[in-house]
Image (cartoon, rainbow, N blue to C red; front, side, top):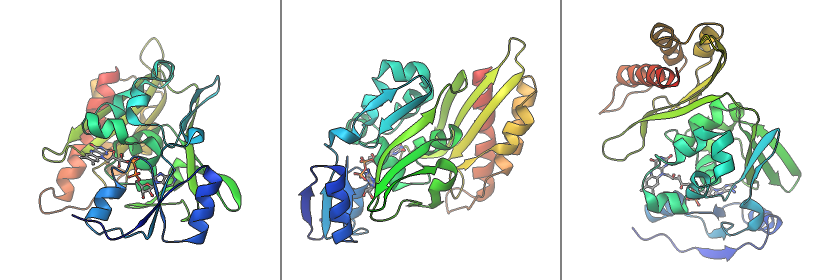
Length: 282
Ligand SMILES: Cc1cc2nc3c(=O)[nH]c(=O)nc-3n(C[C@H](O)[C@H](O)[C@H](O)COP(=O)(O)OP(=O)(O)OC[C@H]3O[C@@H](n4cnc5c(N)ncnc54)[C@H](O)[C@@H]3O)c2cc1C
């Protein structure tokens, strides 16, 4: 559990970090270190250079505006949970970060580190997809925006280039009124076996006007449950419609089994968790 030899550099700005990445294509950025360092200790990652950007003020802002919310890449989970204006406009973020791991991880882990690591069981992945997050990135060629739908390319692989830095994540406002994140955690690791983010608006008679639902953990990649959203829109949110939507939503995922959890189990769990998430919002 000892990493291979590496050099450590603290970046003084994002541009400084981009320059370091350009010089050494094998270099890795470091924020909270809760994903990168375990990989290095297992020697699954062996960067020759680690560029620390976790302290950069330009990556640590939370900006709640009238039409959008911006969260800097190096904002830590506990800072998201403790930010009252953010909790008011996007309560699903607080709900989600509050069920990630333990206080130690929540005090070091960052929203941007989670996004860039792209673990297919990441809790926040469901929120990014459901809320149509926009990933703001900067590289040697300037800045660009990557939509959540394009972000997750494969397990642990994103659309981010190796010389780009994730600056932060933006969400459009207003987001749907009723929001939740529900997780069925792996009993040993605590990671999501199935986690569902559901953002729903409905009128006084419980007729759904907007539904945004995504699932993490259960599938090969986190996925958006579009068929469930389409079915629900215009329907009354009831136990029966939640069940039907959940079935359609689970069908939207691609599942692979492992020795503990066969694909059918994972799909069924996705269905159950979508239904529970929707029922909890009604
Ligand atoms: C014991 C334990 C339990 C955990 N349980 C859970 C859980 O229940 N649910 C869950 O979702 N997660 C869990 N995690 C994972 C954790 O939430 C995140 O993966 C982690 O905190 C990522 O943030 P970080 O700042 O630590 O990233 P780091 O480890 O610093 O970086 C992760 C990766 O992102 C890259 N990176 C970091 N910042 C940037 C940037 N700005 N631009 C581009 N690339 C960047 C790094 O180069 C690295 O490849 C757990 C981790 C541990 C150690």
